[in-house]
Length: 451
Ligand SMILES: [Zn+2]
Image (cartoon, rainbow, N blue to C red):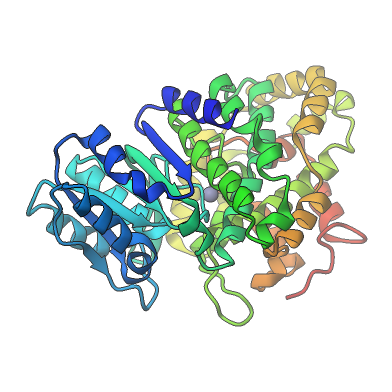
């Protein structure tokens, strides 16, 4: 069943054509390489850590199989390597001196640097995953920072992905918990997509949806296995993360992977919030917490009876774009964030007539929407419990966010991106403030959280 699922996903995806997840997969690297790149020569890209983890074995396997191979290109692994523009430029300059196909060996950072460099050089590449840590392996974007600003830039996904379960099992213990959080977020991404679909804003792509949402319950079913690094669970989590990227290729959108969970998590990532001990926090931990934060909104939404919504009242308190712009200036500090949020808000701003039509749809379809959401969702408490059992971070207090700061992040999440989510629905119905009060005060889910 699993093999069928992967084959079907590969047949639909437009860039990634080869995916091997198994124990001893590195022994197949020459077969995969020759199938995808014929007689091209190869070059291993890694940092000192990932080279030790698998780069050396990959190099030997390619060389031993008689494939022409350049000397490996190895970034320093300490201090922690960042996916920034300088690194991309460095790699590009090196790759320009030959035509070898990059075989990246690593996880998020190495993959992003190689993906971006190869996109600019119009050269295909493949990745050997060293950890089940995030959902970016097969996505068509790379997260690159430049001048202190992290941006997701459109890129060409890898032609092939190879994941050796022994290598994944030897990754630092916590990395699988990051991947688990990133995977769990698809629960919310799906719920937000249901809203956008029902309100005729962004239709669900059925292929991409089934690729991710059908197997999702199985992929996330064993948080204890994540903590224990059970090989079957590692394989499931990696499959989920990689197939999510393939689904993005199918839908030509990251919608299937990212909703309000990623939008909120990304705000913390941009601010580079750290643990209370000052430690760096990786993508998947922020996203796992972002998932619980977004789920708390759904817990409250499901208590409302929107079939009884007063459309005139909601419409009469609808903000003008000028009022939105004022709010944006108030809730963001950094000029580049204000600029970005204004652009996104302008793109998604609707007038009162469009609003009223949308609210009418919401009213008419509420019971069906509610039913679909209930099938898709888990409660904030359930999601938080799974993260806890997996050994991941479970609360924004883990990186210094208290209840009043959390309110600000909810409001920023509404304004920072032109992607319809539960935050927009609550804003458009006029229920956002009431919902945030229910979450952040009294016996609300996040009431009284303190770092
Ligand atoms: Zn992610």
